[in-house]
Image 1 (cartoon, rainbow, N blue to C red):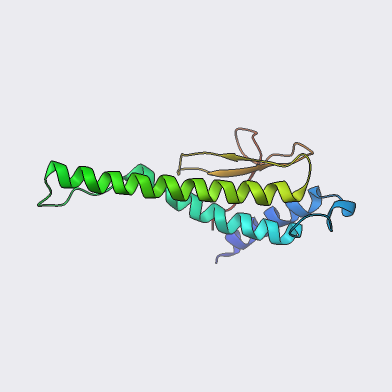
Image 2 (image 1 turned 45 degrees about the vertical axis):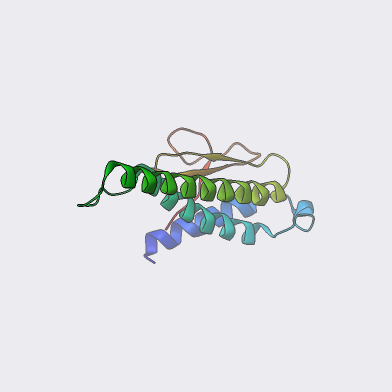
Length: 136
């Protein structure tokens, strides 16, 4: 991990920890630090799934239209299922942080694919939607 990647992870973790009130820390299912780490872990996987969705399956040399269509359908079914699992899990983690927290998903893998909205309204992305979950 590079210094810049480490810094981004540390900034995200401290931003989440700063947003959770002290009286709320022990009421949640996970600590704010653990929630931030889980969000980063799942966010990285979510970004990879979004890349896979954009890339699709590769055309093989001896593919027929039918075999390609079947492989593409299996690929789409798998990525959709995995995407739903990750979204559900990240929503649960964010809900455990308390009131005012939310999560925004984006399907464009060129940028941040997961953003967390916080009670204070703080943002660090260009679209002013939330705090970007680092994927490094």
